[in-house]
View 1 (cartoon, helix red, strand yellow):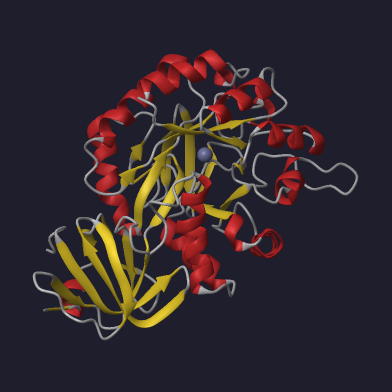
View 2 (cartoon, rainbow, N blue to C red):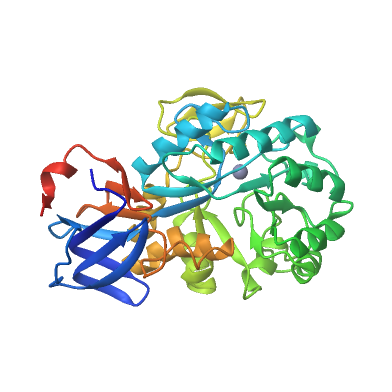
Amino acid sequence: MPDPGGVVLRRAAVVTPHGLIRSGYVVIEGGVITSVGEEPYRSAEGLEELDLGGLTVGPGFIDTHIHGALGVDLVKATVEEIAKLSEELPRFGVTSFVPTSVALPREDLVRFCRRVLEASGRAGGARILGIHLEGPFLNPEMAGAQNPEYVRPADVSELEELVKASGGLVRSVTVAPEVDGALKLVRSAAVKGIVVQIGHTKATYSKTVEALIAGASKATHLYNAMSGIHHRSPGAALALLRADNAHLELIVDFVHVVPEVVGFTIDYAGHRRVVLVTDSIAATGLPDGTYELGDVRVEVAGGIARLAGKEILAGSTLTMDRAFRNVLSLGYRLDQAFYMASRAPAESLGMASELGTIAPGRRADLVILGSDMSVAATFVGGRLVYAREDFAGSVARG
Ligand SMILES: [Zn+2]
């Protein structure tokens, strides 16, 4: 398989930040994109060439909110299991991800942070970009599928302990603005460069604006587990929608948010602010049945995950490639879908200068799509980490 030393992907439809190149090439050297252009490519010596025969090349998908997949529950997983998941996610076109916690006892969160740190050094597939603490600083009444017993007031010293345990890998923290200590924690996290997300909240419109002014910049699964839009009592969702610079996580499985509201959100906020996430749990990619999310039991029927015996949605079994295709099915353009699946996630974490687009200087994290927009192959740092069975047969080497 191609050496990270140098490969040219040729005769591909290339999705760039400045438009689609119908027949183009991407040069990768030392794991980084060094040149992008329209065919014909003028051969340079020493670089292997792969003729993609018209397949589409886009920036790899970045999942910034994921609890697990393929039997791995990230908060319970061993270092080896986390590293294994990194190797499996590229089959969904994912080239980097942010392992996400639920509310748990403090010592369990410390252990989770340590394990992700250790796994990040060994992840041989999708990159681990950081940790998202989705809990414990939530409103217990809006815990959703999380165990309200472990939800607690915002505590700067606990956040500091977790950041330390993670070796600085904590990149996002979800906070409900109305809980005790929330605004202090928002300010403290923002100063440290940690992305503060608003979620699992009953906050009023004005309380949410206060948290945004204090430094919050992103919504945790907009609409889900959040005070919604009522014309006499607008809540967190409307404040976040109207905050021009806030990124908005959206679970586009058409179950958490119906297609009409997905469309409204993209049309109103613009595709540049929408961050597709999976919020996926261990059951993802596996048959219906009973699974765990942290220490709560989850029943999956027809691919929909709910708390055992209840109607409450408990994460999803969504994958990034499906979220991407769902957005396309609503009529949005290819470049807009890639923006929401790759670039906006990178921007929301302040990492867009490294990841999320196909441009010289960016890491060569790429997804190759077939004509039906299914994942044919995935590259991380210029290395082929996933290839569907038919991929080798569909490309020609030179
Ligand atoms: Zn979640």
